[in-house]
Image (cartoon, rainbow, N blue to C red; front, side, top):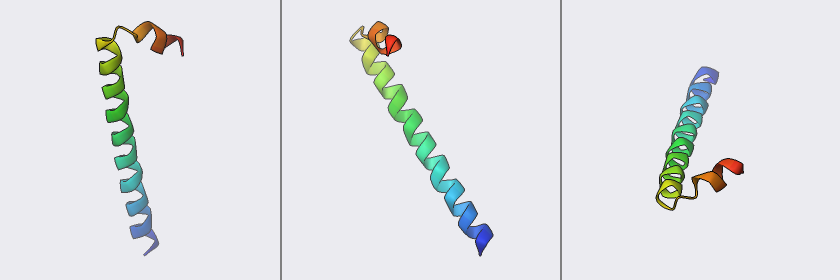
Length: 43
């Protein structure tokens, strides 16, 4: 029971990380298109 809950939490966390990385890559790609990468890096 507890192990199942931990597995579920790990799966949810992995999904969250994957989603975060996708958003991050997307914003980097948009930033490159706008040539605002320098501003992004400074933050």
